Amino acid sequence: MNRMDQAYALLEAECRDRGVDLDAAARRLAELEVETPSWGYGDSGTRFKVFKQAGVPRNAFEKIDDAAVVHRLTGACPSVAIHIPWDKVDDYRALAQHARDSGLRIGAVNPNLFQDDDYVLGSITNVRPEIRRKAIQHMLECVDIMREVGSTVLSLWVPDGTNYPGQGDMRRRKRWLEEALREVYDALDPDMRLLIEYKFFEPAFYHTDLADWGMAYLAAEKLGPQAQVLVDTGHHPQGTNVEHIVAVLLDEGRLGGFHFNSRKYADDDLIVGAIHPYELFLIFAEIVAAERSGDQRVAQTARAIAYMIDQSHNIEPKIPAMIRSVCNIQTQFAKALLIPWDLLRDRQEQNDVLGAEGVLRETFELDVRPLLWRIREERGLPVDPMKAFAESGHMGAISSRGIGGSGWS
Ligand code: RM4
Ligand code: MN
Ligand code: MN
Image (cartoon, rainbow, N blue to C red; front, side, top):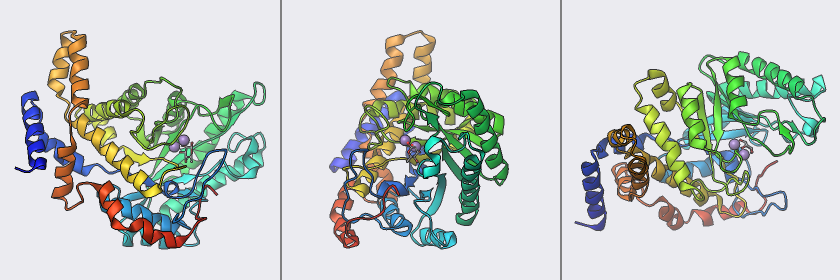
């Protein structure tokens, strides 16, 4: 037996002891799809400096090329999210065709309400009606783009807010926000979803109009079934129990998608799973539990989640950073799939605090690499996508693009 087989046999034995079906976990894991963001391949930085890297894509087509590399090596990233106007092109059908030719499809379309000079004091909650109109028109344009590229997800983050008490009328702004979202919602085709992303601060520092999951939930609830909440893991105050939010939204049928990234202090957009891997595992634990739920609405909501990465790499080489994020997501999802649910329930029923906590933590401590190797090998993928990328010579190949590719503008 080689090392891989030995490691697999060990994991198999552990699963058998714990009454967990490893084959079922492998099947579910192999189906996991994670969308990567076009902007994660471009240059981005902090408010102090954008360091330009060589080989960064110069346009939306080249961003798709880079996303295709990630998919080729991981087999898990068949779609790429676009941001308008960063990915503005003359012919969106040609962009969608380019994606198809590269083995991909275009996923979520993200409107941009934060970079036009007119939005300095807000977009859809601006006190001036003509600016609110402009922002609404931009979102409607994004719905048209969705039709052209075949996308079914409008992924909306509203950056509006104020910096000082008294600067704006929070209730009035809430009404404007609701009005704008209503107009956009009504423009959606029946198979489209509006995912509403919240964030508690930045760029505004006193109040943000869509600050937390409750406000996003309320907006979605008022709009209708095609509106759901998007949880960006970097958008909460320190110490927030994100998996609890996930559980509540799942139970209400309103969890639409994720923007995965990790953070230490603010909205850091670091490699997924790099800072708090246990949190990511616990989020997936809630999702797996929901997928297994006997409540059909909960199970269906979980199965329809749009898993997306939202990263902006400041110092990291973009493509391998994205591959690492995907692998880290797969790792934590794999672990969540190996939770012995009956045992956990049993310990909960017994009010066995340490026993129940132990079931989750011991699952987190399992070495699931053999499971990842297996699903990759079975599908003819490199067992180590990071290594495969390093050996591919791709970094050298794209360096001919030079320095000064596209970024946050
Ligand atoms: C925001 C938010 C959005 C993302 C932009 C770039 O903080 O996370 O989802 O599109 O950043
Ligand atoms: Mn985000
Ligand atoms: Mn963010």
